[in-house]
Amino acid sequence: SYVVLQDARLDATYGRAGPLAAGARLLEDADQWVWDRDVEVFGHTQHLWLRRLNPGPAVDLSFTALSQDLISWSPFVVVRQDARCAGQVMTRQELYWPDSALACQAACVRIPESACRFISFSAQPRWCLLTSKCPTADLSPGAVIFE
Image 1 (cartoon, rainbow, N blue to C red):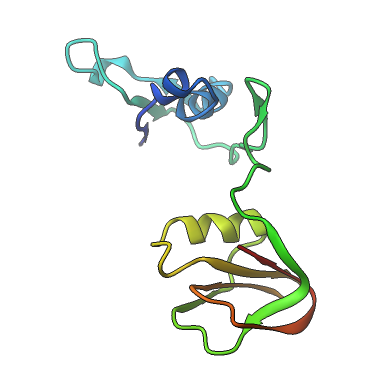
Image 2 (tube, one colour; image 1 turned 60 degrees about the vertical axis):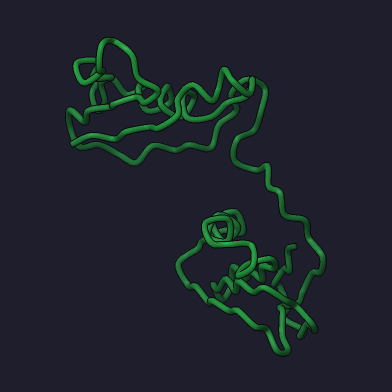
């Protein structure tokens, strides 16, 4: 099986760690992954084609590359602690799989901003609420609202 990392040139274009750094992290386990250059067209591609050699453990992508912590940076800011969005929220999606605030934020980034501007997250009990508006906030110990 393959993992195709698209736009691997973005690291150099923007001068920060991106797909190429993530690919390098995968290739650290030479027993599990290999860079398959046979699929490149005329020796040129913007993608890294990584072929899986053997099953293995999941790769921890929480690392620092080019002096940047790739995991903890987020465009979201905390607007309220111990609360969750309430009231008449127009667009709403409630998820139970995100196990961290960053995973919840990543889910928000994947949908249009018109559908997700505010995030309420709680680790215990685990839930992630994505909303377009947050007119009021209810008390919810341990929860955090991001915008």
